[in-house]
Image 1 (cartoon, one colour):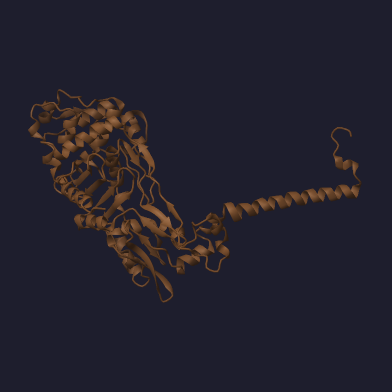
Image 2 (image 1 turned 180 degrees about the vertical axis):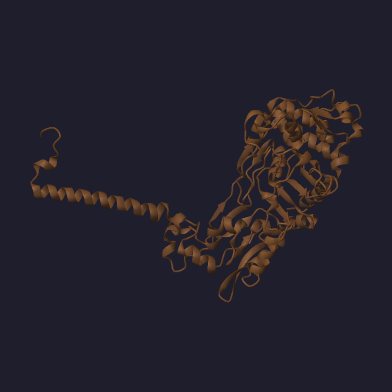
Length: 501
């Protein structure tokens, strides 16, 4: 056979034509088989869960959604059929920021949206069940969501916050399980779900200047004030910019005169008990010394401070079942000096002022990481999804970020205990002490530039070793940290540790 000639060239013309047609059909049927396998097997579950899938649309109107229960099995949300139409009922107004709502008019929010396909019953189970579900007489298998929150703690947190605007996040440091997540003011999800009352009620919520539909715990951005000193300390210790024994010899005199950075005068002097004593890092945290942390931030430098913040989860939304806002150390993109305009902004950021904005969830994770040897676990609300056949998809604990070395976390943990229990710290955060339990924390007073009373903050955890709960509390315009957030956090931690779970 000469080079370049096909074997078909030696066959009779008719036989060659048949071979070509057969080969073309074989290729065509092979491609069709691959396509069928892709759409009917590999992509089947994704297609079944697509929002515009007819099964999904039909299920959203009439299928009985699965229940949502707390960590003890208490039903938080369930479906009732009223006049042949599914209507969602919610047990507790306090849980609205977590559960969200399901409405035939307004759709879904919260976990009702994040786990819509599972609650409808078009996702999960075994792969073979997912593949055959479309062809079954009843294709729905609504799943049950088992949450990490304890309704008793959730309602206690809401009760303590009362009519004040603000947010509370409680987390289990070693696992990332959210124990409570409260946003105030809130709303009644059952009223939104009512097709008769829902439209008028929803309109009032949207027009309310207090923004009750905003989940302040995950999307509220607040000036943090002194609770950010915990972050500054970790960043400086990790970088080697300071050591636990570092002092600034001019600091005592600057308590009276102020510390000047590029023409801006940092004021302090709210801890006269320290007198002429130059504070080290632990003592500076205990008495919440602004001047110490302004100087520490400048010594650390903007680039290292910004890099630490990014590594700790700032500058991007936190991966979570609910939407989250991104916390920031400055409102400018990374660049020279880390994006900080100058050292004056950097100094102010060191003690939680300037352009720093944080979510309560971010600060709860910061406190939890200090308790957990510097590791922030990925936060989650859903412990498991369970189907009618008993199969479960559990959420395993997962390390999210290492935000500090264990040695740095240990130093700050000790300092935070002194900030609650120490001779000087008790004046600022002593009301957070859980009776009989070693307790750590940091209070904060976030000044708002003359626009009303400052925000009241506290972050902390208990017990100090082997912490079972870490919290972040912010009360909008609540005054100094010691006035509102500190005692609230102490009562909440004591309540949880007393539940005897």
